[in-house]
Length: 389
Image (cartoon, rainbow, N blue to C red):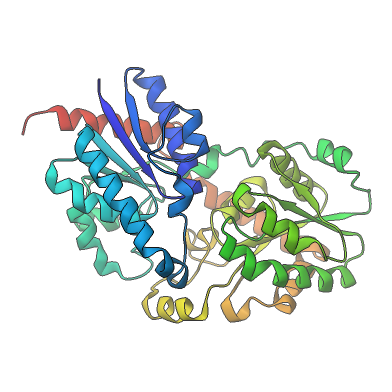
């Protein structure tokens, strides 16, 4: 039986891995899977070697205290791969862990496909040479990544961005209004402070104060905060003293209904930089992007960064579709100023929505859904691996 070993490094990779497994199973029912994943991949039948949450760390000062544990997990995964001898290893995002592991096992005969191109085009582009030694193919989410990596000799398949099949545009605004008693005069503001504890700790108070300032200028403001499993307790604690109690939503369906309500009823979003911003583009929610990291991490990254924008919504069209308030600019006053503009000036929100359409067109694969395109690329790589050199 053909064995595909999947290694996800965090929650977003778990979602990607689960969709990939489902798409692969539809095309090739006889495949077997092993590896490391989370709840979503477990739903597809994966028995994880260890909990994926142990790898979900971000920022230099967050990683350093966990280096010894990460090294043990690296050794464990390496031993498992070499013992199982899979036909293909698919590493998913989290390059600081997954590509180091690939470097260990590829010289031992393991063929490697990396899903989600490392953002070396954004900072330290010279690292692409190391990646070329660690992988046999990259599955890229963004159209401009293929020529960048192919120049370094790495085969690339552009498979489109998974946000397109995440359901962000499938919510029911009226259902959300009825379920949560949202009044006709209330203006919902979607607040997404992140999916990592470190992100929530740094942003939740800033976001709360920004909402307080905004509420003073925009009557009827009602915060809406989606909860993510690993950070639910931190979000509940961080929002407990907000002057306007937020609507907390937990399930994907509730979250998508919230998106629809914010888009339909003249709301806006206060969004942590990352894939969430692309979700807002899919859902049609005008928003401001915010982010803040440890000052030491920020100082190091700034010396290495080579792109103008933090958000893909801005990077793809190479212009500011959504305002970004990053690091020192991530203040309650600055965030509130943008929110007030989005909530009181319809032309500002309309301009963002026009930009969203341009961005989403760039994220679509040549045909089918992103997970289907990724599955086709993986199966093609398995066929290439089966052909004698």
